[in-house]
Amino acid sequence: MRNISILTCAAALAAFATGCGDGGGGDDGLKNVGQACETADDCYQDIDHDLLSGDVVCLTEVQDGYCTHLCETDEDCCAVEGECDYDIDLEVVCSPFQATGQKFCFISCEGEGQDDEYCQTWAHPDFICRSTGGGAQNRKVCVPPGT
Image (cartoon, rainbow, N blue to C red; front, side):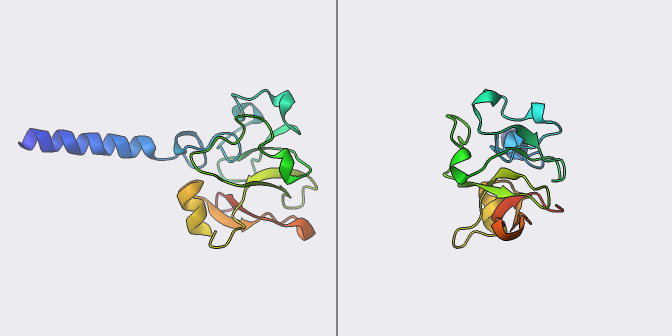
């Protein structure tokens, strides 16, 4: 009986560890927008980059990196099949990021009741809901803290 309990605990621990994220993408279910990265080559690996509305970017100003691409409007985000295949219906928006003067696709947290808890539940356990810092076109988006 004790061996069964140990095996059950070990299996549960392995399942938990497998489901844990790596700080912004990878095993947490995010791919493409919001996925962790070190370089743009880490992003949109299953998507032809030429089909996206703008250049693929790894925002290294964001903790653990943040895969995204350049855009002009919300419609530019998730326009390519498979680009935003998430387990739930996450809205992705186009917004300027800080003072870069460029717009990028981000996971949105602008809806009613969408806050840090929303981002941590649906995007990544470490993400927070914050302003993109893009001036008059500011948006609320899910990103890692410390950005």
